[in-house]
Amino acid sequence: MPEQFSVTVDKDVPMRTRDGTILRSDVYRPVQSGRYPVLLGRTQYGKDSWGQWIAPLRTAALGYAVVINDMRGQSASEGEFDPFVYDVEDSYDVVEWCAEQPWSDGKVGMFGSSSCGFVQLQAAISQPPHLVAIAPKQTWSSFGRGCVYDPGGAYSMYTQQWALLQTNIDPRGRIGADRPDFADVQQAASRAMWELGRWHQHLPVKELPPLPQDVAPYYFRWLEHPDEDEFWAKRNIAAQYDKIDIPALHLVGWFDRFCVSTQRNYLGILQRGGPNARRNQHIVFGPWPHGVPVVVESGDQHFGPKGSVDVRGLMIRWYDLWLKGADLDVPPVRLYTLGEDRWRDEQEWPLARTQWTSFYLRGQGKANSLYGDGLLSPEAPGAEPPDSYLYDPADPTPAVPGKLERPRGTVDQTPIEQRPDVLVYTTPPLERDLEVTGPITARLWAATSGRDTDWMVKLVDLYPNGYAFRLSAGMIRARYRLSQARQELLEPGQVYEYEIELGPTSNLFRAGHRIRVEIASASFPEFDRNFNTGGRFGEETAGVAATQLIFHDQSRPSHLVLPVIPR
Image (cartoon, rainbow, N blue to C red; front, top):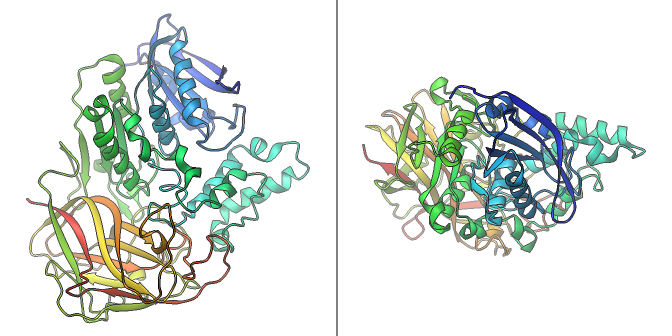
């Protein structure tokens, strides 16, 4: 749609929440008198710069009022900064304020990704009458289990980075400009962003010297609640899908750490939301890591223009449909298939034609590293010995080969697969193309000499030239095998059954390629190290090495369930 309107910008427009807190927004709206649908973005990253990806001037020129709101306690807004504690009520109040303005036609849609996507879900469960639709991109279903902690129970080390980032975005607000040591604290927080590897290694985890507790009290409260307890209830959308009854457009990348959670939001609202929501849930899966606008490179892969999506254009078409009544056909599911670099539309997720296929771990007890005898096969095992490895938290299996950092996309797994603390199971070369599209689960029978440990599972596309393309991964912290809300430590040496959810994918394994599964007990510093002791989270400074056993025999057939799509 061509730009039609001249635009005016009102900065720091105040509104008062129900408890009297002043929140401020920048408002971009057509100069011409009239009432326009509202696009609302609420952010913790500073309204002056965060919303530039939506080009608010250009978007307002299309006949929208664009409102970018600083969330409570951030930048221009007043109040306590405690992420997502107040945002069910605050989001309701901001939506309704937008609807009441003289330049508003009363219809409000929301935009934003990550934390700014999650706040849309919080708005939706609060059910403001004038919220017509949302577009929550690459976000989580529960802030406690999906962001601060992984859905499998491990602590996400990115949480350290995020707390430091918030301090550096708004140092005067977070640290306090009148604090006597303001300059020193700001300097330490700024340098720590460039020395993350050092602080990821710091023990105990509950300490973060560059970030004083009185600067980020919310962060240290999070560390006091490693279980999914009542502390997180208000920030758990998964338990409240039934309160959502509006259309939603979800978007996420296959290599985004929130791919599992975004899928959960889509399926949860589709299955448990109100009738309007169930009829109008849509999701886009693309070949990206975390971030909006999306990028066409992911780790050491580059997907080129074919892999890109104009997220701004997609969102405007979405709101042309729901706020302006445009006649548009939006497919329920749009996905990018890796391996053939092709977009396609589908009518449901998982796909109705899925053939759920088990691939079993096989071998003669020597599956350590890519040089071992580990085999992945559709044929169930018979009498086979278990595989074992030693997991030492003093030398945890890395998340990224040769670097002390979190994965920011897919990278060649070969250096990791050369370690003896990684079990590797591989099919023979495929005789024909095989498509895997959909959710993925692993079922392991395993034992450890520790009171607790972690189990990490990765799905890999092994190219004929030896390149090991990490497609998907998942983990479980053993103490949370029965419930994420309740810890139950292990009996050393006892065999337990574990179910592990991996991230979904869509990949065409080409003929000549091989399907590979990796199993380890760490992905550091993607997650904190499990010290194998069963000690209190975040308080330990040393652990014990543990002997790990993975069973694959007739009564304990460890396997991966892949969603195979017939061609």
